[in-house]
Image (cartoon, rainbow, N blue to C red; front, top):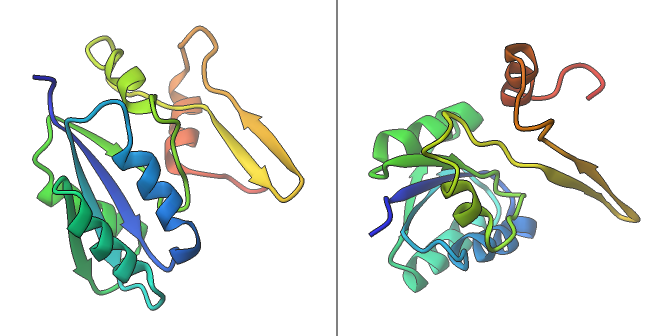
Length: 152
């Protein structure tokens, strides 16, 4: 059996996007997943959506906590993870159905797997592509991991 991958999804007031995110994870071609949804004090219908998905899929675990922010929610997920590998997905994002399987095929070769992505706007998509022969310098990776800087 393939190793268990824990997908940690911090959830905070994203009811508008959450179903699309969760559908993209539960329907992955790679099935040996633990999906931890950390409800970080949502005041909209996000918790109800999480609980409904938990009832439908035994791989899903919902943890509710007072708002601790993105890092606090991720840390809660990490503390409760049982997987061999961790994956973080933002709750307003979604993945192609083969994304985890594709990433898993590279996990024995590298320490960190990053994904290319599209930024979607009402009238267009903008591609953000990782992969200059799969090699990045440390400064580039630090910027990608820690998030946008200034006008990014």
